[in-house]
Length: 225
Image (cartoon, rainbow, N blue to C red):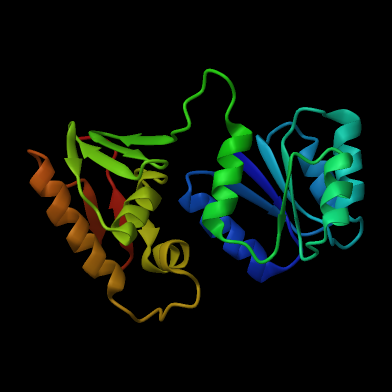
């Protein structure tokens, strides 16, 4: 799903983007109210995560603008204010849900899944590349029908690679997206975990693993033979 994040603090926006992408979503970030409202009304997004305190135009006013044109687009409000009256004001003006900062990413992802779920849909989000299948909800991985047991970090790494099949991903890109921007760029943790993944995928399949090393750059997940 394509999600829009409207949040003016870069650190929080980065946290949201990385967490939502790890949950299988494509994310666009806008840092101000007018830009967020304009983006929300393009019709390109399945859900909006909207901060209440924004420069240029407050989040509740942005919400009003969205609701004047679109009554169905799910909107989750974020704010540092946790008082009941603030939550009620947001819900009364058309928000679908409300989350006070600070919050756990797992809780936000659960609320996003709940808003995106419609009758007849399953709650799972599946990535498929070649003979690999990864379910972002159950966090289970199969290769050629055989289940592959992965640790949480191995799963996140494979999910990131599977969201970018046949793309060459630098070690810096992978480190930022899977481990976080504050990790030591000189670490060899990526190479270690790629080797873990290769070993487990090889054991589950009859062919060599599709993770290729691109010398002096990073890695690529091969989508085809």
